[in-house]
Image (cartoon, rainbow, N blue to C red):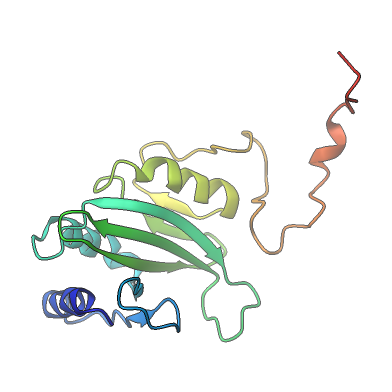
Length: 178
């Protein structure tokens, strides 16, 4: 683990001694310049820990670079279905951290981090639309890429490869049509 990452993990463990963050390297390749460490935060503590990572001057994660999701359906040894993944960065201190928060069916849900990083509003909506994971306390939890009334979530691994018939309702247009 990189020195600055070790320091952040140490700060987290001293502040939240009851949470096992289970830090791990995102890649088996050891490269001190590009080391990417991931921690796991339980959903009921997500906002509290993320707020600390943002506000504490030893961490200063002022930027949410990415927020996405992974569907672990049929993944070997996986205990959870969805892993909501956050990539946060401290521009000031020059370090980054990956955070995972897990959710499960039948109604996967994690807390929203929009109160910490405003930019999470769109990416949380994207995860909701494509994976069906809802975010509690989100200011505008509605679909962003598909239409209202669309019942499925296209990036779930159990979504059919050819879709659910939504493509058959569109008129075929040829290149020469004007």
